[in-house]
Image (cartoon, each protein chain N blue to C red):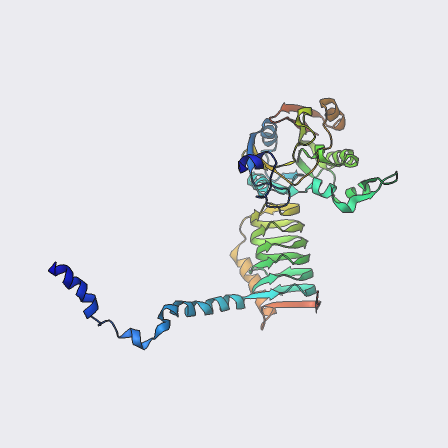
Length: 216
Length: 184
């Protein structure tokens, strides 16, 4: 019984941190498999992981002979220090300039590939476009970007999952810290958001997720 | 019947194994514990401990293992020795040690010659360079990770000699810095 509670987001008393769950759900990912093929060679590539810190991901990336970079964009983007009064009374917004000054500070064309996971769906609205533009700037030409997007069927209460790489085609999903699903992108929105990229491929994933592989 | 009775009688009528018992009285069963105690003490003596009320600004180097639960701003260099940054540890410094275990917060680059371990309460902003890395679920890490192959032993040996000569009496030294102890 407790297994199902944990699996479907009920009790989290087994959590390693507030809002986290230790259960990991394996899922095959065609998008990630294609991403892996794109970064296999040569050694020594710089790979940026924008998801939660995961030792599996770091082991996988460094195991391929690459250098792993980690930056938990959602955690940073939702930090209370970024919240400022909004334009209207009793409203708040995010200090985008401060976020861009403090986070994702890398030279242009630093990374050979970026793992974005489903960060876009959970980012506060003001940060979505600036983050995508920043990723484009710090990625090398021909660099790959893997992003996931929920379909409309996922529902507004879709829990946030941390993605752990198990093999080159299998991911493990672990319910992570609580973030609210902010929006659902249509394919056309995704294409508009990443219009600066040279190519875009959609893969229909499981559990109401679309996987998107982009090449700068 | 006869045989069994004889067997029963044997232990009762044979008080022969007495020589060592009276010499060492009752606490014979505690002997192993008294032997183990010094081991614990020597282990503790080998690990320097910086408590949570200690604030150090400057360079911290040493030739023994260190448990750091206070604040350090500057540089930490233990080279061939292990460093544990406790849950109250707050470090704004580049760290260099053999094994580095982080429970607290570090702003700076961390070099663990053999291993770096981020516990679930760890917050690390900086780059990691090491041979092996262990990250527990819940740890926060922002930076890059460079997995390096084993260094040559000669270089490591040279470094340890330097560290030892820099601190002849005590293992851990604080140089060019102010070390303050504050009540929190």
